[in-house]
Amino acid sequence: MIRPIVKEPDAILRRKATPVAELTPEIERLIDDMIETMHAAEGVGLAANQIGSPLNILVASPDAKPGRELVWINAAVTHRKGNHTSPEGCLSVPGISSPVERATEITMTGKDRQGRIQTLKAEGLLAKILQHEVDHLQGHLYLDRLKPGEKEPLLQKYRKLSETLRKIDL
Image 1 (cartoon, helix red, strand yellow):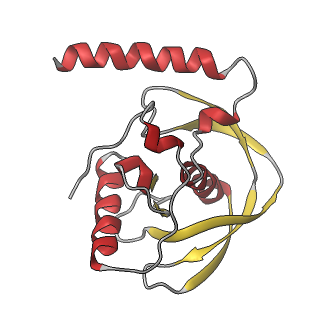
Image 2 (cartoon, rainbow, N blue to C red):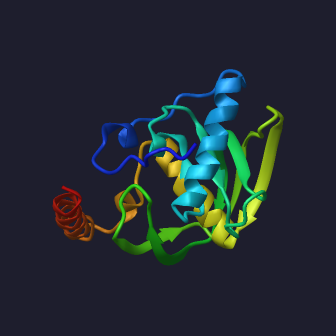
Image 3 (tube, rainbow, N blue to C red):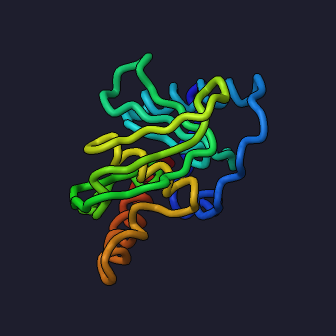
């Protein structure tokens, strides 16, 4: 089921995610919904809080091809190496983007969909996506990584765009 994507300034986007204690049919449904929602929104990653769930779950699809998604439960980046700056946007802050500095290589740990512990070394686009989604699970948006003076003008642009879209939807 496609779920609505939570938008800034919803408070759930600023809360640290709750660890998943056990895999249940409800968690399986949530993961399926996250994958379906991510693809419907033409995104390449989605954290559970972006659809209103407080749980530490993320999905990623760097090639945007259904059936090849990565699922991470209780995800954590344990190592970062290098730096690279490239444009970044977010489904929860639509209509704006900005260059963001991220590690070029990361190591991430967590559990897969079957509850098995997994470790992944990632670089390039996948590393960027995973860092972005783990930030969500920590209660941070990519905007929080911007240099002083860059965040507020972007948020003002987003608020203006959101207000315009609300008027159109009425």
